[in-house]
Structures are given as structure tokens and as C-alpha cells.
Image (cartoon, rainbow, N blue to C red; front, side, top):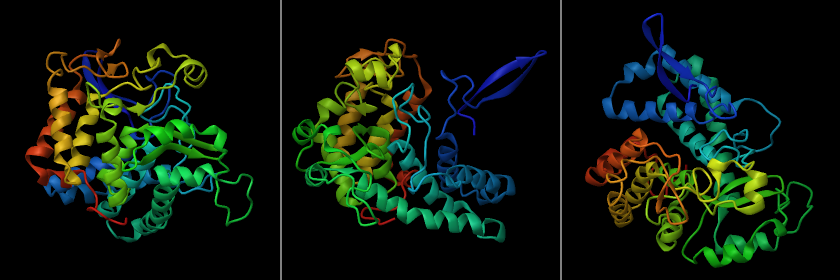
Length: 368
């Protein structure tokens, strides 16, 4: 599935040229574009009622092909989808090989959306069963093993390592020395919590990934208590996660040796810039949708007010730099389409909450 399209010319004729990652730095294939396509197709069907388009065989095949990429048999024992490094929103290289949260949240949303879109005919029966078999293990894994709050930190802190067998509590063999417990214990408020950024054998990436956490709330990947705790965290750590422009793509940024080694010393991904702790106004629509869904509209109003102070004067910049997002990104494009769209969507969700049905899946307390 292409990540984007552009108009190209040949022999005086214009045509649409798809980008499958060939134009990306490092030529990395996009792992999320087919998942977004399914999610957007559901939104289109709800908005227009055009079931004929969805039921067309080429569209049904498109859904199946997208799902097959994620459900393919592989050397992986976990229900999450395995993602190559740099193939998610936080990229260029951010050491995210494995199971980054952003893709898992989109994966869950696409699975749920596909059950609404796939026609229950003989051709689709195998795919429908495959989706149904994956959903509950995926939901359980993400809600339990990605979740971080004060209570969960205490459990992980006392993990025994090198446990064997199916009953092992520390099934990913996480060593406590790899986790900054004292910083996390101070930073996570008692009323807050969030889903960790990545999880795999001997790996628990404790960074806060905004897209993955907000999407988890929007599509009921997190339960009602977890969803409120994520919004509590954003509210109580507002200066860290929102600052002068909603909102940080991830927090905290990788600095010093981590920036040089994990990110490959990419100057565009220097600390608190771009994908390494930079702030993206595009995320405003996700924050507004998550807050409105959980009846926390005051958070959305606050975030929109913060953004409105600068977006027009800054000519709709692509991203912002600095721990408080005070600087327009050094290489940020102006009049960025998804910056403008994110703002308009956020305003629309506040003005007309009924439009939330286009992006939300399940209600508060939905159990998947």
C-alpha cells in the first residue's frame, strides 16, 4: 500500500505516481498505510452509507490483502504484529524494531474495522475467522503487558528473571536494570498511566508514544479506567507532553549516547526535534477525539486554544522543536496539509460530537 502519491509528468501527460517507501530516507516501506486505508474506508462507509463501494470485490480484496500482510505466519510467538525498524510514525532510525505501540493500536483498529467491512461470504470466511482469533489475544497482551502505572511499576520492579515455562510472570524476561524506575516513579502520577512504546524479549521501551496511546483510547483498545488514566497523565504532565503546541510525538527524547547510537546520530532527529521528542500539531485531532470520547472535552478545548495562538502566525508548520515546543521545526514545511486537517478535525469533533463515530470504535468500558 503506498504511503503517498504525487503528480508526475511524462511525454506531456500527467499521471499519479505512488510512493511505496522508495522516496523515504533509508527506503523504508510504510507499515501503517494499509491499516489506515481500512480505518478510513470504514469512516467513508459510515459517513456516506455507500455500502456498494465497500462490497465491491476489488475493495474486499484490498481489505483481505492488507490484513494478510499483518496476519501472515511468521517466527513470532506473540499476537502483536512484527514491525521492521523505522516503519512506523516514529522513525529515522529510532530503534523500534519489534512491536511498537503505534502500529499495534492501528492494527487493533484495522482488525475491528475489517469485521464491519468484510462481507460474510465464503471467500471472506477464513479471513474473518483469522481476525476473530487474533483480537482477544492481542487485546489481552496490550492491556496487560504494555500497561504502565504506579501499581504495574511495582510488579515489574520485583520481577524475577530467567523464568521458564508457561506460568512465568516475567514472560518477556525484562531485567529491572534496563528500566529507569526512579524517574518513572516520580513522573507517573498516582492517577495516571499509559501504554509503553514497545515490548519484546528483554525489552520494555518506557517512552510515551502519543499516537499509540491516543489511538488506543479512540478505538477502545484500553478499557475505561486505562483510558481515563492516559488522559489524566496528559493533563497532569501537560508541560511535558503538550507545552506550547499539542503535542509530543514521543516523550522523553533520546539524548547523548542514545541519540548517537539508537537513532544513528541523524541530525534531523536530534533531541526534541522531529520524531525524537518533537511536537506535531497533527496529533491535535487525536487528542480532541480521545478527550471528547471520554467526556473530557475541557482537555480538547485547552489543547485547541494552545494551538490557535500560533498555528496561523506560524503558517501551519509541520512540527515544532524543543522540550516545550517553542521553536518551529528547523526543517518543518509550512502550510502542511495534515497540520491544517488535524486542527479542522479537532474543531469539528468538539462542535459536532456525533462525527466521532467516524473514528471511534466501541464505547467507554468496551471490552473489545
